[in-house]
Image 1 (cartoon, rainbow, N blue to C red):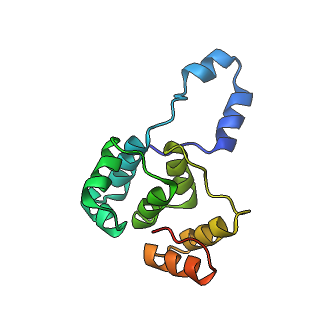
Image 2 (cartoon, rainbow, N blue to C red):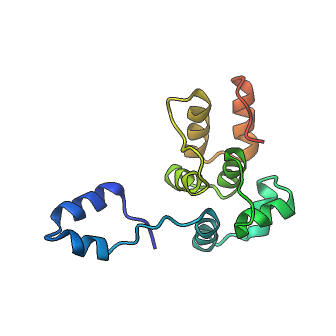
Length: 139
């Protein structure tokens, strides 16, 4: 099920006759990174093993990220983001679920990453662009 946009939730909240009805009708618990990644695998019909390989992750470490037994760094989440070809909204949600900062267009490095995400670039391509601009690569 798709997550409603913040603006849609705000409209619904402001239109609610009582706060009780709004609160009871929504789940405010954010999903864990592993739950969110599993949801995305199903929605996009992707195999975990393929994503781990395309993300250039160690097989064991990748498995642990997907099962929730390891907490990945921001760069590891970004590797998965590019391997899964996520949208900017999906990428930021995955980053938040991992407890790390979302992509910020005011950061030069993040701006390059956002640009590459928007253009559907591969992990290799984003690393090439980051390197070209003298920024830290994702992996």
